[in-house]
Image (cartoon, rainbow, N blue to C red):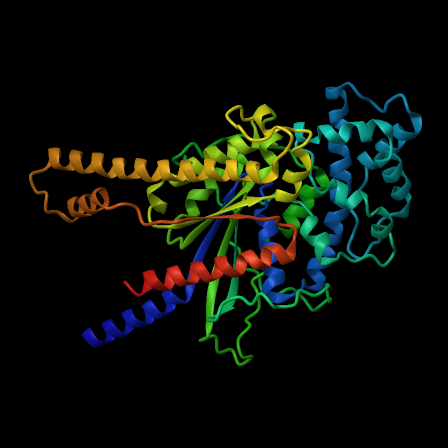
Length: 456
């Protein structure tokens, strides 16, 4: 019996050394799902034909919802297209557009209405105000490519897939199998080559809970999606791919390490589900939209996107769940951040910023990085104070201070937290840039996990 138990323990340790769990957290529209798509390209090179068809339908839905969002925001900035019969008729047509079906080309009758609206003077005047109304930032990308998208044989490129947007619903787990040598930065990321059916999906069901998450992460706010995107979400929220093994082709995965990414919705209504993912986390990957410093969140226009991200980050940094967990901070959308600094100075939204008001990109990036690192440092101190207070209460309530719980509290209260914060500036839609960062991140996560597993 003793020998059998030891053998089982050894097998469990070996298995744990090959499994890491990375939890992706962040506010809505921070880029978590984009990172998942990029990981798919880095490890597998392309998407399957079934996936590409789903994304093709989503591109059309994004064209509709993006234009609807802009037109519906016009009255709030004193603009309107109602006096222009041609433009109003075009919007009426777009507003009532039906989803496209599998294999159906983009209906050519929508090309001119889309083009008419995109080039309309009122729409052009509204575009600089997109940050006030949480307009999707992919709208420029897709509307600049209308002629290509409406080709009868159009199929999404990798970049089209990366640019699509759909709200993440529920909790989605995706497993990437990485060689023990780690990711290779020289791996070629090809243009999409349609394959067979998508590999097997790995998804945790959409769980609901009334539990409040510590750190002000709870909210009951919900938001409306368009009919087209809602339908796409319902049909495709379980089309998250479990990457095919990159072993030796014999089914022998002994040389592979599993990176298990857990992606959860970032909107406020989804955050109450986060607590279901907190156990056995190797690292937390937290995404911050740098360009959100002057933008509102989808659910509440009075809430600044960057301030919302800082509030979430503060909650994560003070959670006992993550006291020994590596924190990977991705400051995302640095390309959009750089383009808007000249017209939207940081100090207008964050008065304590003392950098060049004309738009010093590097100074702005460093300012926000310091803000988040200070929050993490403060979280470490708060956790230690928490353990000290708990230890004091335990000592007051019981004479037996040699209990295992007392020893645990004494240990936690006396030692500094060993967790590290790894900040990175990224542009999640740039595959090559993300690949370079993810190589170092995957290596760090695997090394830290192995170091921890060897102590078990």
